[in-house]
Structures are given as structure tokens and as C-alpha cells.
Length: 156
Image (cartoon, rainbow, N blue to C red):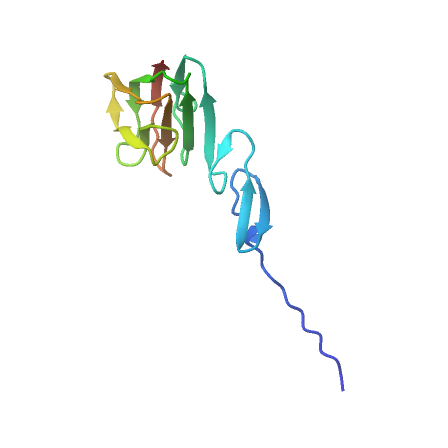
């Protein structure tokens, strides 16, 4: 008679490395949580995140006016003084028309009302205005073809 040892291994959610950008993963009951440091956002820290709180500033895609890279996910959160609105002027868009986009939301999240969605090559200025002191600008690119991206300015 001999003893048979049964070895059980359990995979945990963090074993699959779900957190992007080399971020910390913590296992939880029924799931995981990515610990995103400042500058990153999302369930898996998949979004680069920048905050703007000045009364005016220039916002542009990474590397502008040089070409941006593939697979980008950027959020630019604008928050000005309460009681003020934000006027954003997009002065240039140069992206892959089908798949790389600049989106502007009237609020602080992507579930806010969409004010603007642009892609392709646009050299004429486009102006939008928020209804509150928050605005979110989102820039995404896919895995192929890139352009110069976008440039915008805002003021309150």
C-alpha cells in the first residue's frame, strides 16, 4: 500500500496579468483589482489620464505634431471653477479615418453627452462648449496606421 499525494493548483485572476502598463494586481473574492497610479485609469489601468484645472490650456495627442503610436487610450479631464463653462477649440485633426478618434464629452465621464467625434484629416477649427465646469476629451488609436493626431485649446 502506498500514499498518493494529490496536488491541486488554483489559478487566481491576477495570474493572467490583467493589469496593463505594468500595474499592481490584487486578487479579491470573485475577481481582482488593479491599483492604478496617478496618470492611469480604467479597470485594467488601460487609460492614460491627464487632469487639467487651469482656466486655459493646450491639449494634444502624444507626440503632436509628430505621429502618434498605435494602441493609444488617452483621457484628458478638464475641470474649471464651478459656475464656469468650458469652450474647446479643436484646431487640427489628422488620424486614421476609420479607427482613430478624438471624442469630446459634456461632463467628466464617457457616459456624458457626446459633443464631438472626429477622425480623418480636418484642418478647420471646430468649437464646442460644455454645459458645466467639466469636459472630457478622449483620444484612441488602433493597431494600424497613424497620423499627427490632434491639437485643441480650451478656456473658461
